[in-house]
Length: 253
Picture 1 (cartoon, rainbow, N blue to C red):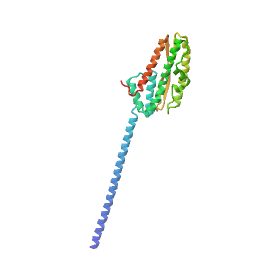
Picture 2 (picture 1 turned 135 degrees about the vertical axis):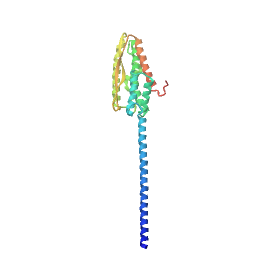
Picture 3 (picture 1 turned 45 degrees about the vertical axis):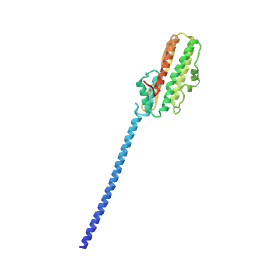
Picture 4 (picture 1 turned 180 degrees about the vertical axis):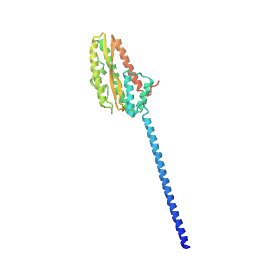
């Protein structure tokens, strides 16, 4: 009888220990599951945050920040040459993409350096042309002479934007200055004239968005007197005003 009672105590004690271990196992399992669920929730949250961040970064028209930058640059370059108009659609497109390109201030400076270059050069060339035509002597404005002496006065190197493409752009503009000098020589004679004006045009953005190709279109500025030169000069001033308005982030319609 005593042996049987001892057996029962031993049996129930063993059963209790099994249940205790089972409970411990259940608790550990629950903890693991809790941690797993927490980790899963954290991972889901991070993925969602990542996608939200990507959405914010790519709210421009391109698939990347680089492409957004070059889309904005294309708007400015084409507007500087008069290939597209200054209107709300192009204004919104420019700012939508420049704001989603990162480092807005620096990239805005980079675009300005390129976009204003040919506009400013054409203004000074046409002002020089007007004075040369009237006086029958080659007369260059102070700014045109400074551009001729140092291209940096026209296209300043912006920090972080001293690229091979930028170097090539400056070399092309130097060639345009040389052509403009020859045309000033021809204007000394007065009478009818046939000038060439160079205008920048964004030809293509690479598929990966990291580069943009810029061409220089050429238009004929044909005329018979100083009024025709003034007409082209006024157009150049208009293009510069378009750029001023485009770069004004607080422009009101």
